[in-house]
Image (cartoon, rainbow, N blue to C red; front, side, top):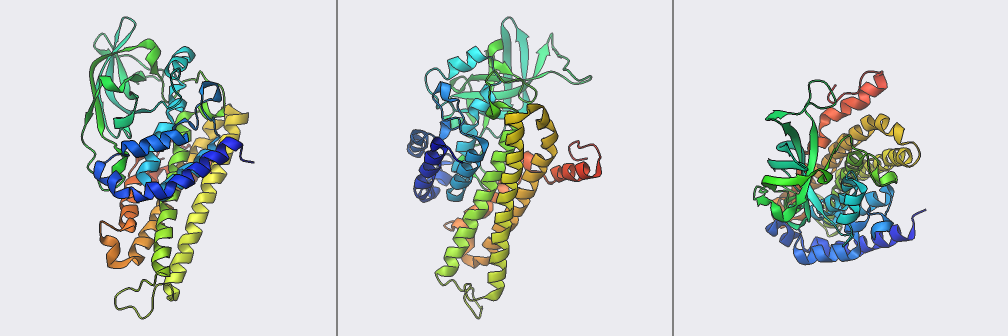
Length: 389
């Protein structure tokens, strides 16, 4: 049963959806969520959905988050992505020492963290911390973030410091105030234009020990299932966004058909065409199946986080394969809807064109790569489940 906070926030997302959809042109043109719309999203509580209640947040579970991200993506993919990244902030920041987490959330639960998980910087060991220099790509939401994060190779005496595994360097995520870095305007892309996923850069920034973390192997300082394996929560969230984009495309093409859309040279309108009805029915089933898979694997993951965190690593192959399959299936749905929309769908003003561009930008994300399907196959065969096995 959904708790009261989850119900209210989902209703708030649904109430905001028409406003978000109506701002699509502004979001694309500005290549970010406009500040006034961002203020509405914050006021609704969407950026504090996973923040602990002890720190002024709503502390919703994964299942509620999936519903909310899908709802937002159904209205606008870029807005959903920006909210997703911002809402995940406490899950990453919980890998800091508890005192540091408390200090960051002391003033407000609406803290936004943005940055890059790719290792594109160096953190040179100095007294009390590190000197950080680097440039990180795809820092979604960086223009409205309070803090930035960049994953770095730890350098000591001019050499990479050895990591836990033989032959590998130590990696740590470094966190610093956004005002200390600079945005590199690189986000000129096919789709998801409003996510503001520019590069970020910082030069010789001092980062104290307390503001560094291990993004992939760190131990959270906050108790609770939301803070077990933060990166895996992000995988599930992305899948919900993909389903929302596909559902939005299905909504758009259905509205076209109901309005009497007829393709040039066609004998019947879309609504009267049995061929279109078959395609629409197949798309409906694909979206339903994708949503069901997200929920099923999400429930499995959440149950492990809540009951047996030691079992979480065993779920990674299914979780990664789930995102790859959902992204692939959602793209197929969007492609079919776009084709059915005819020549008008190619216009910039067409929501179907935007869905097409957004979906195919999401599928380029490294976490949604087709190769992750190999993990599900390897698991079934009893083979090692390494990436791209």
